[in-house]
Structure formats: structure tokens, C-alpha cells
Amino acid sequence: MALWGGRFAGDTSAMFKRVNDSLPFDQVMASEDIFGSIVWSRALAEAGVLTSEEQADIESALSVLKAQADAGEIDFDQSSEEDIHSFVEAWLTDKLGDLGRKLHTGRSRNDQVATDFRLWVKQQLLGLKSDVVAMIDALLQCASRNADVIIPGYTHLQRAQPVYFAHWCLAYVEMLKRDVSRIDDLTARMNQSPLGCGALAGTTFAVDRYKIADQLGFDSPCLNSLDAVSDRDFVLELLFVASTGMMHLSRLSEDLIFYNSGEAGFLVLGDDVTSGSSLMPQKKNPDALELMRGKCGRVFGHLQALLVTMKGLPLAYNKDMQEDKEGAIDAVSQYHICLRIGVEVMQSLALNADKCRLAAQQGYANATELADYLVEKGVPFRNAHDFAGQAVVMAIAEKSALEDLPIAHLQSIHPEINEDVYDWLQLEAVLEKRNQLGGTGHKQVTQALYLELEKLDKL
Ligand code: ARG
Image 1 (cartoon, protein in one colour):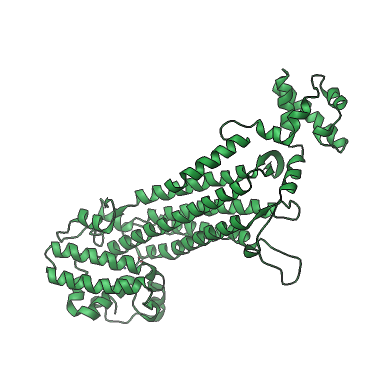
Image 2 (cartoon, protein in one colour):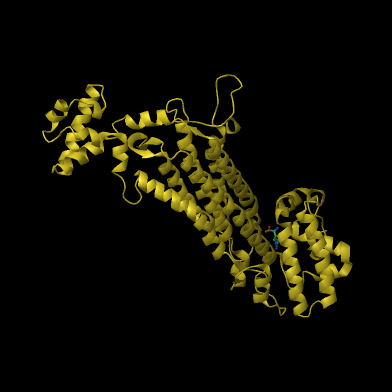
């Protein structure tokens, strides 16, 4: 039965009910709604609205419902209640009669839904954080397994300079650590309780909002009732957190799809994360990665959708805000799935070290070294850059690598070039030169890998 029947004589249209009902999706907050109601009943008892026996009866009935909801034993889809709040109240009234009808004293669904959804988002952030940490772990493990593999590093998708594959992994570790810190920041910022703010203007009953906040596990109460019931920044931020995290996973996917291509052939993906073609028997497609990249679109869409929904809303609560949930629920579930599949991809991929190395040696990725070599001989860098460029042109014409050009040819470009240039142009030497903090030198990468593994359980 609707919670608001008294004012109405006519029936709700079936189509309006369909657009208005949120139980089909807000049932995910069942546990939070029941918990919030238990805490509210305690506040009402302290305010003298409920006797302690009444409160105890409500709490024990709601605890039974919560246990059933947590165990997945309730089929919400069988109910015709409007939303999770009406469902819980109707269930309680069914069990306790008129006592159940006392629970909503001094409360509005507006502060209730804001509270429930904050509790839900906080819980999701916990789960997402552990998923992101698991993905960081998978990247670190993959880096450790392939510590000596060298791949070409790219800019503009042109071979630029060689890097260790582990360095590539560590780049994504940095991104994912920022994702973790965004989750932490959001958790801290949104950790305030709207309960006790009523419909918009605050509650008349003498509830202790600090105590309510504390019992709900929030740091403090929200300080303005109008804001408390109409704020959905925490949902927008959740969507931004998910969007940014998904964007990182998408870039990782794009790299791996390319590395896995027939043209690059740097790695082979496991059978467990690839699929075949219904027509072409030879195909083994990187579908898991393509879906990680593809699902970004809908998550970004959810962020955009809620921003647009919120932008014109007057204070305080408006039913438009019920649109905050489906996108957020979907975004969390897509981000969660993609992080999980990301772990499986990192666990199953096998690098082809020889092909990686060969590619890293090609494309004149050591041309910067030749310029640096000339700088070492006292040539100003800008001139050295020109000479190295000329050497590349010569090498292309001779269909040769820089390090395979005869010394006489190199000397025709600059007389300061000696036999020792060949040491500089070797692949490992190129990498070893980059041993400053943050570079791809072996010592740096090994150290970074060690430090990140150390820090993992402190995230
Ligand atoms: N189902 C609503 C939502 O998700 C709950 C709040 C309804 N409040 C109201 N006054 N109609 O936003």
C-alpha cells in the first residue's frame, strides 16, 4: 500500500506506477534501509516517541528481516510496493500492526533515501577498493614474472624508446593507486549522515543526530537539512571515480589489444579471456579487453546523465533524483566486473620476449642515444639531434639499424663518432642510461617493483 494514501481519492495509473516505482532497483539497498530504520527507532526511543519495549520489538522484527534480506531470501519482485522504504515499513506493519506504523515518525523518505544511498555507496567503495588493489597486485605479479622483457615504448603509436615491460605495468600501477586514493577521498568526504533532516527542514523530534551518525558508521551529521536531502554529489563522485578507473582499464586494454595483434605479436592472451569467430576458424579475439574498453562508454554516460539530471533541480528533494540509482548501480557493477576480468587477463597473458625485443630494437628507438652520445663528446644537443636525424636517414637508405652502420658511415656524419658508439646503441645500454628516479633503467624498475609490492597491503 502507498505510504501517502490519505490525500488521494483516485487510483494511480498503471503507467504512472511503472515510472514511479523504484523497488525494482532500489531493493539493492534493502540491508541499508533496514539498518537505518533500526537506528532511527533507537533515536525515537531516546526522543520519547517509542517506549523501550516498542523499540525492542521493532528492532528484533527488523533484524529478522535484515537477516533474510542479507541471505537473499526475499523476492522483492513479487511485491507491488513503491520502493524499498515502503516495502520495509509495510513488512514491519504486517508483523507488528500499529507499532510498525510508528516507525516513520519524524522521518521522511527524503532523508531516508539519502541515508540509505550513502550507506550503499560507502559499502560499494569498500568492495571497489579491494578490486582495484587486486588489479594492482596482478599488475605487479605480471611485472615480476616478466622482469627482463623489453618492449618498445611508443609516442603517437610510433616506436619511441625501449622500456621494460615491467615499467609499462608500473605505469598502470600509478594510475590505479590514484584510483584508490580517489576512493579514499570520496569515502572521507561523503561520510556524513542525512538522517534526522526530515523532508527538507529538519525534524521536530528531539533526536540526537550525532548519535545517529555514529551508530550508522558516519563521521558526523550533515549540517544543513536542505542540502542533506538534495545532495547527490557523492553519487556523481562515485560515477567519476568509476569513469576514471574505467578509462584507465580501457587504455590498458587498448595497449594489450595492440600488443596481442598479429602485427605486434608481443603477447598471447589466455584461452580463458578470449573467444573465437563463428566463421573464421583461426580467430582468437581479445574480447575481454574489448569489453573492458567498450563498457567505458556506458559508465561515462551514467556520469553525464546524472550531471544533466541534477543541473536544473531546485532545492530540495525532487523525484528526478530517483534517477540517481540505476546508473550508479550499473556503473559499480561494470567497474567491478572489469577489474575482475582485468586480473584474469594479467594472470593469463604470456609475453613473447624475443618478439618484444626485436621490435624494441627496430624503429630507430635508439636514435636519442646517438644524440646523447654526441652531447657527451661536447656537441650542443640541438646540433646532435640533427646529426642523429641524418644518421637515421642514412640507416633507412641502407636498410640497416643504427648500430649496424659501419663506423666510416657514422663518421661521415660526425667525425667525433668512434667505435665506443656501438656500446651506447645496444638495447640494454639504452635502458641502463635511464636510471634516474621514475626512469626505465633496470635498477629503477626493480626498486619501484619492490617498493610497490611492499606498500600493497597498506593501500
Ligand atoms: N524512491 C525515492 C528515491 O529513490 C525515495 C524518496 C521519495 N520521496 C518522496 N518524497 N517522494 O528518491
